[in-house]
Length: 299
Ligand code: PAF
Image (tube, rainbow, N blue to C red; front, side):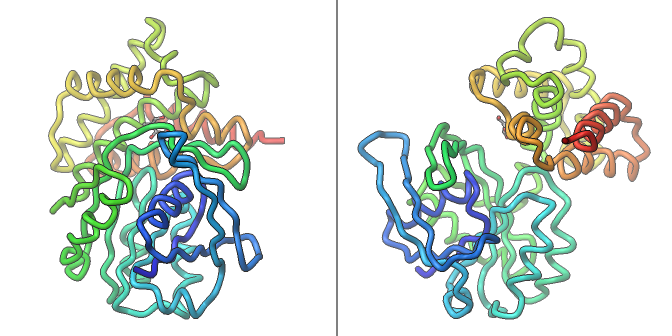
């Protein structure tokens, strides 16, 4: 398959290398100028290390692609899709994978005819330098179509599964997206504010705050049609905190490097939905405000 990957950050580079290893022809679409990009790819086993040289930013390769995979951050999705429009064929499936929610309506307006598929992944990757990526954690990826044409693309889950298992096709992608958003609401702002590892959140001093976050998130999820109890959500959060104890969350790293965070697509989306259902979310709103304040005071 000819695949264009847009946004070769940690997760994008991980998928680019994994798909290239399967024999697919990868082309990258990057903000940085340059017609080639060298990537040192390291899978979960040392023996899997490989160096790739990918073509970049070639409009004819974009136009010829069988699949487009967009792995930019939520706040970059609209811009990324807009830049592709002049060359994008209306039949090409577009897969969008990011933390958080809330980009779907704008994407569907920009791409009224393309099959549009959203994905959420628990795979983890680390970039020790701008030309290297390491696969640091394994977890499921869920995909599902968000328009009629997208719902007919279940075979994409098999293609991605062969590269980086496990991948599962979902008839309602919003269910796993909400699940991931709930975990991100609990872990990301706290680790970013306190500049700590995920595992540090299991300390007793965070217990009440985590419960309060889960209470608010479960109320909003239930109103949105994805019922979950506070206790079940809290248990899921604790499981992720323990499984990723030594990791720094993506938002912790964004704040540490003074990069814009995904707070609006994570806690911001939750608050927006809470307003819609007239549910009070004082704890999540305070965390959202604290992250916004941190971003405003970057040097
Ligand atoms: O954003 C992240 O870092 C991850 O989604 C998670 C699950 C919080 C683990 O670090």
